[in-house]
Image 1 (cartoon, helix red, strand yellow):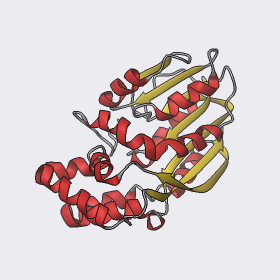
Image 2 (cartoon, helix red, strand yellow):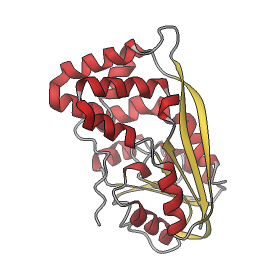
Image 3 (cartoon, one colour):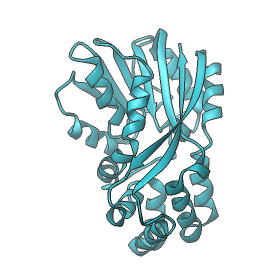
Image 4 (cartoon, helix red, strand yellow):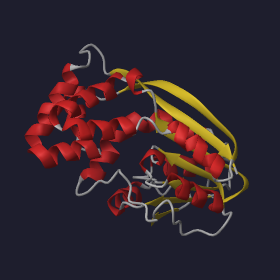
Length: 265
């Protein structure tokens, strides 16, 4: 089954994703990479790599003797990933490929990372079966998925804006992205991984000034693109204003919670 994910960005959105999403993801990317205990010379796959946040962090730890690959279905995201590769580490091999049909030999990776991608796979079992195939025996898997929406005021504000300006279907799609951790752990067991664990990480993230950041971030994610498609830039502006109105003016630091799921092949 082809992996037609629910996270599709077109046009200039991938470039904005790299710019606006990076501050939010950074501490969780660090935790994700730390969870697989990388070492110099390790072979690592960043699955659903997007613009390469986790791939770059993994390459820094794998060092010049390591190998890092990034796979994503979205070629626009991969173009940004290639452009942002700092060339200070081993060359990162970015490849356009679905998660359920990976172009790699069996048992080639010491670790597989998946940063905020698993919740969008249309066939999670097929994707993790492929992940198991390309991971060596004893190799490590780690993924983050957003969790506990009600504890994340920034995301709750986004949800309210979607309910107001894009309707119940968009809001339901947004909510579903926060309900993947249990499905992920069960699918890992079915795929043949073992020692599966889940740990919820709540981290305070200090975002850039919200007056500019909120609209920029919204324009870089699929739900914001849906707002633009249905109501134009004006709808995005109104949604951003609604988000800011639901957040305190005294701070730009907000708690975010992600489930960190790990397993061994």
